[in-house]
Length: 166
Image (cartoon, rainbow, N blue to C red; front, side):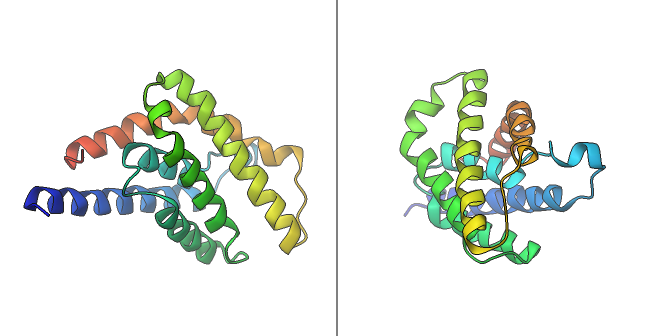
């Protein structure tokens, strides 16, 4: 491994850690009632971005670890979010070449479908392991995810450029 590759791996680790930390903070922020259901799934957006940009290094295992951290933070059933994020990263890794050629507006639609799959899987699993039902309001965050994707993509691209990650 060349020194440049080692530096890029270290930069990637810190960029993923920093963006995941910021997403965790945005996830736990207190919101007014009218905004609560439309608040985006920040962690899912960060996982989609890094799995799209660096599919060989950010995949299901990294997503599972991030999901487990979120479960510990929220004191939820172990493994549900981890499995959901790992599935999300797997799908993005498998389709990253097709996704990268799409325009940002086309990516918005695909991100909406990915988040819908994630929410369906985690909602179903929460329904199995606890007393949880999927309501209409459960799906409202899809609107926030789709609308925030271009801005999140641009901000994460800037972070990647500053960290010199290829």
